[in-house]
Length: 219
Image 1 (spheres, rainbow, N blue to C red):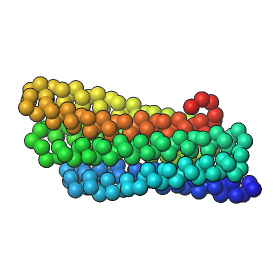
Image 2: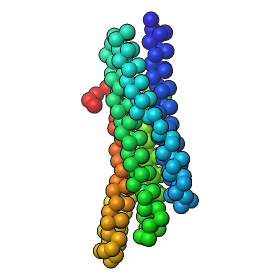
Image 3: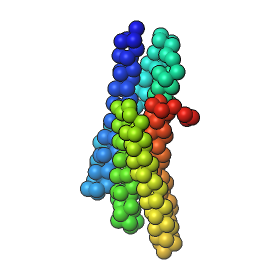
């Protein structure tokens, strides 16, 4: 019975990592699109996100089936509940990424000053990828000190995204004042980058759930 439960749990963990990998790959390609000024890379990035919702739904079904079959006790129940909630965060992370790609790519060839946008968006994107990657790594750690260190790293990267977004917001506000005709474009670009910044929030939520799964406390 225990062996079967551990197999089920290992399968769920592997599937969570697979979805996380798709989202990370999508963001890596979207970042490459920014760095190389290559709008075609955005399309490749979006392709990485195919079927994420379906895969997340399949994981949810696996979790519910495992709960029904094995009736796990407190620690394992906490772990499975965390997995169930993490799939929702991953679905939202995929949605944030899709919306960012969709909105930002529309303005890639616009006449507005994108160099200012790139200056802040590239490091912001790197920080979100770092936060999400570190959060997903937490699934493999068991020691409290290691998990806490990873959580701190996620929080630091997420804080960077907030700071960089705030700087970009101020910069685009100033540009929109000096170029009123482009104000709408700047607002749309800021909306797109806001979707990217939200990915950092998703990473923190995932990290908090892994922390709860390992150490307990409140969600």
